[in-house]
Image (cartoon, rainbow, N blue to C red; front, side):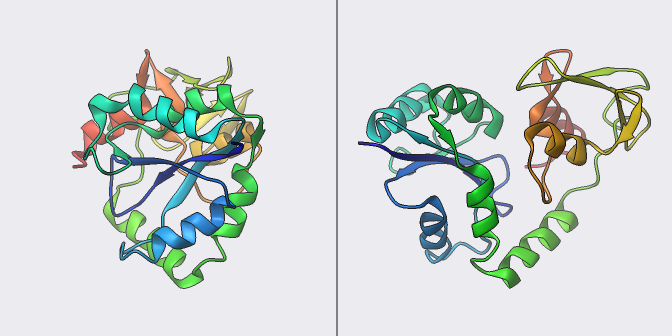
Length: 202
């Protein structure tokens, strides 16, 4: 049966990803999940329509079973980019932008609280504090694009200074607040993992 498979994160659940399916609109599923008692709304990292929703979801759960937090729940201790990389290969339509736009309307106050929570919990990324230096190359996980560390806060892309979140939005053709670090790699290691190790997020 055709449907959608989604990759969700929640600011209140760092380092965890929810992988699930729905035959309805994904934004309706997001609203359902927020009504189950979680303190902050889920955020859609990626959502795609697939030909066989049951088979696709089962394949994901099998592939990431070693990282499953609870066998009765759809939560995995993985980087969202790991799931996105696989799901994008199975997608017949990327519905992420429309889902993200609609998700913002679910609870405006809650979304604002989520952003405030994330800013309070997580320090702003600083490449020098993370052990990188000026000129180090960061590779984009989706294609062959790359950028270079310009200073502690910015990168250089095609000769122009960028904040990583803005550059990631540009390359993904998206808008709005986002954490760009999961999409980038330094010497084969995910930048989000380096961030977490540096700032001891647990």
